[in-house]
Image (cartoon, rainbow, N blue to C red; front, top):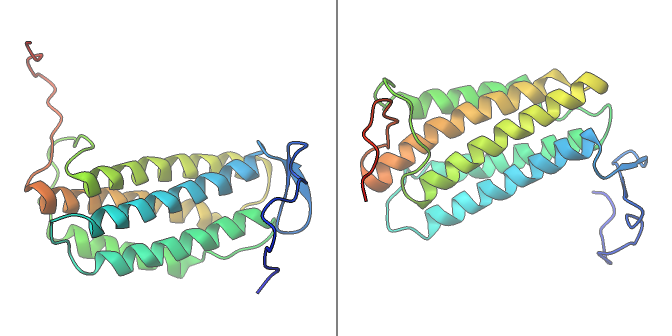
Length: 192
C-alpha cells in the first residue's frame, strides 16, 4: 500500500495545483481532476444512498448493500485510474458485472411506458441524484478523453452504471412507496 498520510494538510496545493498519482502536478480545475473529483463525488453519494437505506423503515432487497459496496470499490478504483495517467483499473469484467446486476434488478420491473420523475422516498431520490452525478462524471471523462488518453472501459463503466442506478431507483421507489412518479405531458397546472 502507498504512503499513509499522517498530516492532512501539506500546503502544496495553495498555489492552485494538485499532485497526480504519477507525481506530476496539474491545475486543480484541470479536466483530469474534474473527472476523478466527480467520480469521488459519485462515490460519496452512493455512501449517502446506503445510509438512507440503513436509516429507513422500508425493507430493501438484501442484495443492494453488497452491490453498492462493490460499486464503491469500483468507483475508488476508477478514481485511481483517472488520477494516474496511463493506469487502467476498470476492465471489461467490471462492465459485465454491472450488466448482470442490471438484468437481475430490471427483470422484476414493469416495462417503461412513460418518463419517470426523480423522486420517491429518500433512498430512491438519492439514487436518482447518484444517477445524475454519474452522467456528469461520464461527461467529464469524455472531455478528458478528447485531450488525453483514457482507457475506453472508463466511459463504458460510467454509462452502464448510470443505467443501473436508474433501474435501482425504480426498485427503491416501489419499495418505499409502491409506485413511481410519472411525467405527464398534458397535465393541468396546479391551482392554489
